[in-house]
Length: 247
Image 1: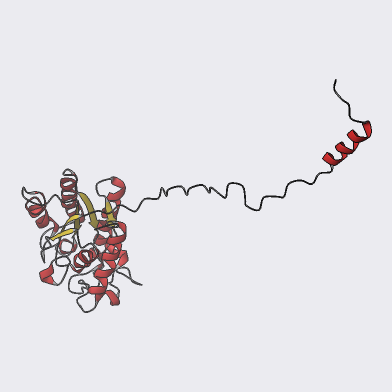
Image 2: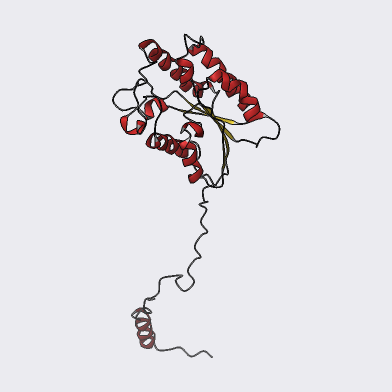
C-alpha cells in the first residue's frame, strides 16, 4: 500500500522547488577551456625570380661610352640575376639588328628571359647622311622585337630619350621624327609586339619635353647623353615595372 503525503506537505515542496535559486553563472566563457586553434595563414610570400637579361643599344647603354649605368643599378638591386650588355656607342638600329642574332639568339648564349632594346637617336640625326627615317627605324626595331619573342624572350622597349639640347644635329624636323618614332614604340605594347614599353622621353624631361632635365643631364653638356641621376630614374622604373621580385 502506497502512503500518500498530506496535501499541505506537497504544496510546501512545490513552493520550495519553484523558488530555488539558479546555479551560479559560469565565470569562464563557453569553450574557453579549449580555445579553437588559429587557422593557418593562407597568405603566400611573393615569388622571386632570377632574370637573365640582354641589353641592346648605343652609347647610352655602352659601358665604354659611360652609358649603361641603369644596368649596373639593376645588377645591384638584383644580385642573383644576370645582365649582359651589348650596347655599342654610335650604332644605329639597323646595325643593332645585324648583330642581334649573334648577340642574343646564337647557340651558346644564355637562355635570356628579357631583352632591353634602347636605340634610335643615332638614326634620327642620320636622316640625310644615311637615309634613316622613322619608318625604317621602326622596321628594324620590329624585326628585333619579333625575333626575340619567337624565342620566348620578353621584350622591353625603351623609346628615344630627349635630345633637343644636341644643338649640332637637332632641328624641328628631327624633333617631329623623334616624336613620331616614340609614339610608334609606345604603341607596340597595345599591338602586342613588345611586353613592356618605357617612355624615357617623358621620364627624363622636365618643362621642355624635347630637352633632358638639367638634373639628369649632369655631368654631360652635349644635350644627348645623361648622367647617373638619369640612369637611376630609368633603372627605378625598370625595377618596379619589369624586374620586381628579382633575386
